[in-house]
Image (cartoon, rainbow, N blue to C red):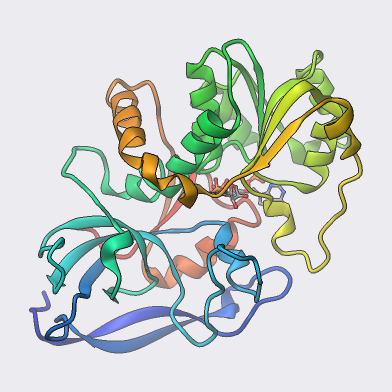
Length: 347
Ligand SMILES: NC(=O)c1ccc[n+]([C@@H]2O[C@H](COP(=O)([O-])OP(=O)(O)OC[C@H]3O[C@@H](n4cnc5c(N)ncnc54)[C@H](OP(=O)(O)O)[C@@H]3O)[C@@H](O)[C@H]2O)c1
């Protein structure tokens, strides 16, 4: 066990260079550097030991140069990549943090991180739920499902809801929220095992394997003969095009993500956009960090359901920082079943 003030080795994951096309494990490098386990004198920084790291699809968008204003900046080639995670304070120069505090928020893909602006991190109050949940259901993906469904979709009891990438970190929650509201819910996922999970574990009314459907329009008509009120969009591309044909008049689309486009050099076109006009569809993109002010309200809401057993959560964990890159790129082949978490260290 390393002591405060000691210089220790610090394993890290580095982005080698900007990535084009499908990401590979070799786009990232495993490096060992050193770090002194002490906050520099006079600094307001906080030194963290990272425990769990979250693999999130948006991280791919940070692996290339982009110029989206007010979006997360690209990673710097040659530097440690960052992402959401759960960490423990080892030393603090900041009045709001003390040794032993647990937090979730942006941290480095490394064993120890010195964070100079810790104000953006959320403190974790001791509970009996697994700490890793703060990478998923109790963290950024949970907030995304909550804000996207309740704030953007304007859901009503009895409405017909479709969720793509439905077994993932966000999708599994959206489906359960929609069921709690009394909606009819269908999800799509990329394997028969995931389809079973959707129906038998998360309580979706129906689910289908989009990889086995040669006509997505026909598949949607099978499950929504009267049309879709709400589409929670996680994938984009051909699925979005088919959904547009099946939306009801005054339907809503919450554009949470479009993972099918993240690795393409030339984004696919969308052909059925005119439906937005003829069917008076409201399609709205959103980014979770615009809703972080709702986090305390969300936490009260979700903790109650977890404790009552009314909401369940499936995680997919890999052990060891060195296995992080493969887990991260596995999001783009659907290797993950549920929320993909990397265990760096257990408490
Ligand atoms: N707006 C925001 O603030 C916000 C916040 C969080 C997440 N998001 C977005 O929400 C979406 C879901 O994120 P998540 O964290 O819940 O990820 P996730 O679903 O846990 O993992 C990604 C899943 O996407 C599916 N997928 C991968 N490539 C695909 C493709 N080409 N076509 C269709 N499906 C594909 C795979 O599942 P299958 O096996 O089912 O194909 C994979 O398991 C992503 O688009 C992400 O960018 C947005």
